[in-house]
Image (cartoon, rainbow, N blue to C red; front, side):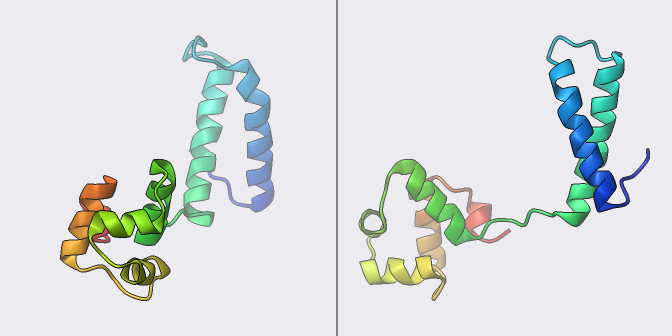
Length: 121
């Protein structure tokens, strides 16, 4: 398969995807020329983006903040849920200290966060 080798080619591929998207939907046959072109260009763009625009894993703090937002919980409520002081939760949330294994387990359970994320795996 061909590769995108420059930023200009990448931008052109994105533009072509924008042109093809209105022509392809869930009912488009997989042997349709527009479907095939969109599939091929999308794969090329994805490969280029993995190299030039990698997405790093979110930090534990970012995941906790997202989960607090999703659940409508503030730091004070989190401190209460974990049985910690507001100051201790603030230290964890600011990155000044790491949660202990026990606290990490509680964070995982109370906020429904995958243990692998809490452990940094």
